[in-house]
Length: 311
Image 1 (cartoon, rainbow, N blue to C red):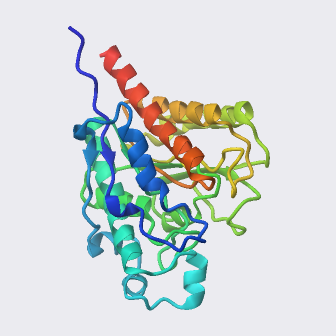
Image 2 (cartoon, one colour):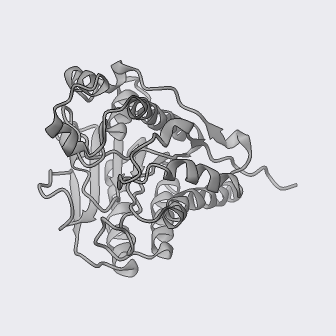
């Protein structure tokens, strides 16, 4: 008799696709479309799905200043601050932000329990303590790390950020926190113009293709996991390194992205390290973009099933 298939926890809320003006370049509809895409395949069972609650203010204030959070929630941020964020401070977007942060915390907790868990949002790594930037308002990964550390659920966290843009906000927030190791592999010439110092930065040249990109990641990640020995990996699986991404400058294919996801997840799980994935960036026409975001979920199921067969 075959053992039951492991169930991959997936975290999602219908409010993730908050309405934006039709001319806005942020693909907000991708979250709902991704949920629908995943429900069509092997993720259809309801047992896979978890719905988060909004993050309480006390969680977010472990990372962000109260004045900043209140100004955003109450629509009092200055116009210049909203321009840096690139999103309007509407009531649906405030609710969506609070829910997405709660979703990443829930995903991290589920990863500790199940080995792997995946969030259909998150990865807002350009948010600093008192300001947002680049479509990022609250740094969900930073909040999740702080919450779990403060609760004593983990003693060491590793942030693996493979979005095409540097995780500058995350690097700055944890610049003096030895319990959180930040690793960012990003296109060196891309946003943000002013980089922060992660614990480990891997700046990549424009136009890097699959083989060379994967060699760089594989040349760093296993040794890093052995050195840091984290209790949890928080993985930003941004798909904007894809060759067709509007805001990326790298040249990965879908096959290269899928190989990347397998490399990261297998490296963590072969060492018994729980890993929580967040969606990260991606900017293209929605059907194609949704397929790219689905790759990390495909890889997660494969890695869970492979580990299950080995037991």
